[in-house]
Image (cartoon, rainbow, N blue to C red):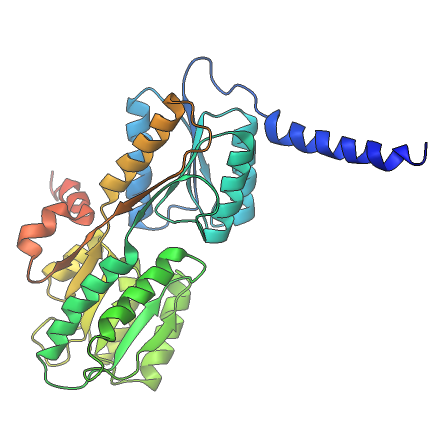
Length: 340
């Protein structure tokens, strides 16, 4: 009997795993497709616009959407997804908190046989099958900074560059940083060693760290922000220093960023920003929905597809021709006009 006890315990453990992984799903809808949309938060214009595009489009297709806001808590988001799986949703779209938590959530969905799609924030590696739709952040950042470099080269002086680095737990931030360095390193004779300012994608952290960096390095004259949503903090630091000036002013700091929101467009229109990298938000939103719905229709429980958004750089040179392709400009154009 003693010899049998370990075998019985092992068998019980195996049955428990099988039950948790395969038998926990319950039907979520009666003949209606149900999608869980789990997002990390809605603090920036990009995420708000993406949320609107995805939820409204799915609902016009007659699909029930279970919205789950993780409020920037990876553990909370994981529990929300587990609960959705237990309810028997047909598929999951996630905007994960970071690359590592994305892997964990994909693993949960794979185990349950629930197709999952990741929007714009890729997993730390490609080790688990999922639909992943993401901008080519390195290429877009490189193209944007390359334009800024060409602008700098016309000034005939050595530049002191600074990069506001995103949260390096996010693969997007890593790729954007690499794109910045790719462009900077093409012209080593033009630049001093870049100054790196951590932001953690947090406005308060950005403000404090940029203020400190500018005190130590008052000669900074070239700034790239890894996300456009940090421009208010950049303005708050530069304006009191007399360096929030338009192109052509002797105190203008060459500025660029990445995302393509309406603030970036306004600042480019005012001549305060030289270039911004643009993600095609609407392409990404429709691509993630189409791929997931196709997987559900075809009975694919673990779809494995990577879809790149090539994006582009909107610059002072091409703004008139390319602005209609910028999601932030389109959001701005849709706002109600004053007095109407």
